[in-house]
Length: 231
Image (cartoon, rainbow, N blue to C red):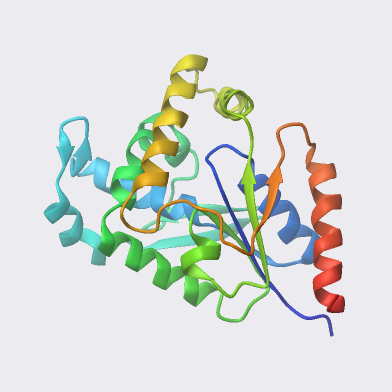
């Protein structure tokens, strides 16, 4: 029987982490967990209750509602993907909008929110055989992960990918606004007090600015094979 692994993928927003991680999970028949979707779902919940928005952040309100937030990933055979459910509601499309994107870093800086998400993520990965992507998977959630990858790409490439993604969802937004949003997100992620975005010392860097998904998969397959063979 092949050794089942925990594969941690961290990196900047709109680097294609989720697409890459999902492809690996499909290839290995592993469970794919999009941790960013978990934080986005919590952000959406809090936005709906006006705990977070352009007027500020009501931390007390957020903390009072954490026990009422339940997040699940349910497989949709029609699209061959897992979708994010917030309290039994499919919110996959809504959590990808720019409004949630602009607020999620602020929400994720609350220590109690991060503690809850890390607890859930560790429970999901307890039996291995998972691919998990986020910003602190290899540094905080699974510091002993079997394989750690840190993804990056140029800001213009990332903005274009995000623009194309939103356009595909019939969400029209200015390219420069997306670019500004990504830069602001990078700064917030790198400088937050709790679990800042950084590369784990033993993580392999993947700059996929000019790589196709197929090329990335060829790269990671070699890494997985070496890990399984013990070389």
